[in-house]
Image (cartoon, rainbow, N blue to C red; front, side, top):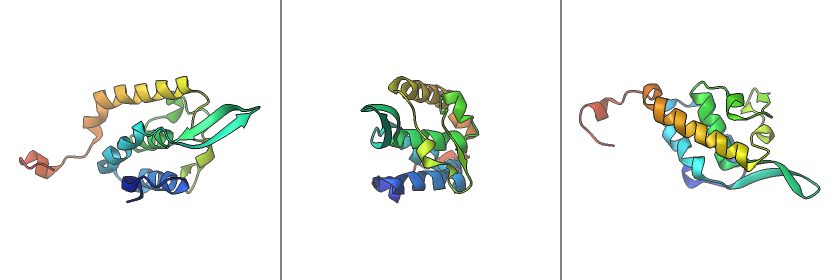
Length: 132
């Protein structure tokens, strides 16, 4: 419900990471819908210049990578630190530049287009001719 309502702040981060940790592949679409949300959640600045920032789309992407068994460092998540409760320490999710973020999202789109159908669970009703 938090994700559907897109509640701001740490609630959304925690909800996404909870689904990534405890959910299943049937929830990929719900998390993937957040990839277009560029809302900034936090940033680190040095002399008024942003050196690292976390957006909703970054949290969603790292959750998707976890759920699909991919290596986040291959997508440019170089600052990630593991956490036993939330998978990754939330302040370490993000990118140092817009170029890094754009490259990661582009890589996900390519991977998703080529592989997502293979990892999603079989939906019996859809196979039987029903629509969701």
